[in-house]
Image (cartoon, rainbow, N blue to C red):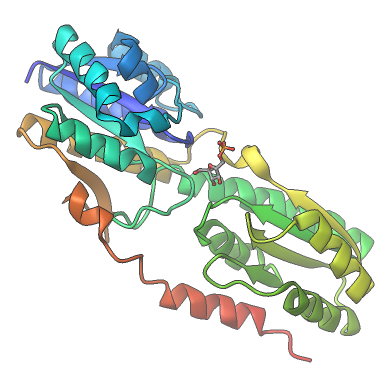
Length: 323
Ligand code: F6P
């Protein structure tokens, strides 16, 4: 194999640049040329390819965002659209691809492999919602951003004897809320997997108000409530002046942490090994402390991660303040 491409797809995540840098470094060591494809699958069908080298790798490795750019392209589901991408790759002599992105990128990588371009996926998303990997690239950085924000919110809530509703990302996965809530001492945690009703939340905050707790933080995963409306309800029911903070896209940016860089670079090296061995249609993931390459088709049918331990953690934290 002489030439490979690399692209980042879906919502960006800190560490995607480190993944691209890892691909370049690993390929360089094997004498393989690397082409960066701009804006994900969109760049594939538009032929937006640029040769990237070790200097490029050095420039981007430590940065947030994705220097190659990313996009969501629903049309990529259509075979005729994918065929344009395959033709562009063939014209450029690019034989295989590394795709770094969330589960939305899986299917495209699998279909391209079936059309003759071996693809290996890397788990790049802050959500930690990829079943074939214990952790995803970007999760640790987003988690630390959230922790810093909640610590700051706690300072001011404590000064003013207030309550806060803090909403974090995660799509349908509660890991960001669970890990952040556990490590910052949030009094109420509600996630997709362990959703409390608005009444339960208000009741819990009311109990804390009665006990004279000086500050309360209610941490929720996005898409579960209207956080501003929830803050109003909490205020009415508990008596705390209550403010809502939706952390939004602050969670997606920033310099990747050491753990995200390490996961990104090592998975990328592993991905290039797979391509060099002639493999495709696989997704790299972390299983315990080992990297594994799982067949994309099998990962699509994998049961959701076992969350029983996490759920009992949330239950315990939510029940620590009894009436
Ligand atoms: O998948 C990453 C993610 O940040 C989710 O947590 C969130 O639901 C979504 O992307 C937001 O997407 P956009 O940046 O397109 O608004």
